[in-house]
Amino acid sequence: MIAPLDSAHIRALKNIVGEENCYDDTAHRIAYCYDATRERYEPQAVVYPRDERDVSEVLKYCNTHKIAVIPRGAGSGFTGGALPANGGIVLALEKYFNQILEIDEKNLIARVQPGVVNKHFQNEVEKRGLFYPPDPASQEYSTLGGNVSENAGGMRAAKYGITKDYVMALRAVLPNGDIIKAGKKTIKDVAGYNIAGILIASEGTLAVITEITLKLIAKPKLRQSAMGVFATINDAMNAVYKTMASGITPVAMEFLDNLSICAVEERFSKGLPTNAGAILITQVDGDMQEVLDYQLAQLEQKFKENGCIDFKKAKNTQEEEDLWFARRNASQSITIYGKKKLNEDITVPRSRLPELLEHINRLSQQYDFKIPCFGHTGDGNVHTNVMVPNPDDPEELARGYACIEEIFKVAVDLEGTLSGEHGIGLAKAPFMPLAFSEEEMNLFRVIKHAFDPNNILNPGKMGL
Image (cartoon, rainbow, N blue to C red; front, side):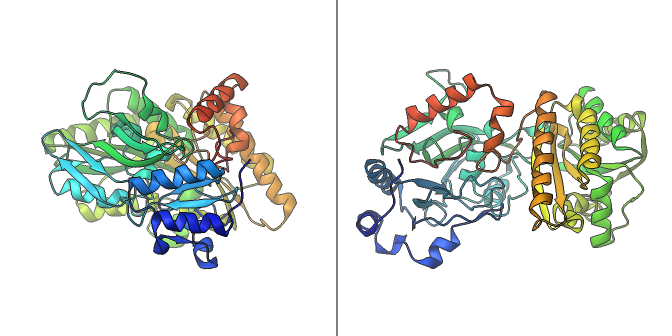
């Protein structure tokens, strides 16, 4: 049973972190009550740990007194993973845990604190000719600790993978205050259980991450983008998986359906082909222009073999920016279709993409909602957006959520998953039994109990 905070608890926490790093006033509670879901849950206090020892002492105290602790980075998540739905304290890591501790160019690794912003880290390693590929859409403000906790992806995942592919080791504090190190700096490490792998995507429910060791690679010298226009979305989806199966691996393979294209064009007048069923935007990279030319020629051939009616290559940086503008602005543009966007990031095997989009079109007609889709089709990750015009109408909103549940069922039936990068949090917690058997859910609960027997860390998340 999670206990409420009282004045004695606040005094004790201030004694640990200092008066200036613990607040229970209204302004701080409101500032930390939300994330990108727009849901609101006020914490009872906000605590800024100064170092790992503070984290340990705070957790030790809260574990003893059964006070909920919600670790938080930038609060940019889409599923409520950092919301204090059961009260307690927000453990805010952005104030002090924001340093790049080491960039080791000899071993191609970096050590960072969890509050480092993704894009800032990318910029720093690229100054040294190195590359950290995971690039979530929130990279300008999301933190690496949050990226690890949600196993964030991004547009470059088609070629380079996602966050878990770059995490080599973690330092973390368990709910009882114990400090552990999971993983090693070495490329190979098969000693013991993969605790770092368990902590990745655990959404702050098992431990508080205090340091991350990340793998780096050499930065490709060149890149080039192109766009393919397709008459139908089915042609585009077939082009995706057949291209990827042919041995060509572009950095990114992004798509927009007709609703998304039309929305961007209505908002920004970029001359997009509004009569197209879909567009695919792709990028290749390498160290020689001849390599890029070969890859783009192969992409054009495969696209045209699968119904591409126009293929445009960017000839300079400005043309490349113009090609990517539609994808980067799709999410904000589709709000023309409804006041509330029920946004989910389902993922299926690439070969099932045509079936997935056909089912979504059927559900759009069945539930009478526009459902614009866009996303990272290079790795099978589609952002579906059920647009609810009148969310103040309880019946209409309930119909929107019923449609979302059907979309989840379709994804699971097609051997897919509930989330490719946003995580589960609160928003998708009720749907976990669609994707996992009771035996599997019980195993998750056993793991949670082993780490956190008093259930103080981020309680109520992930359907546990």
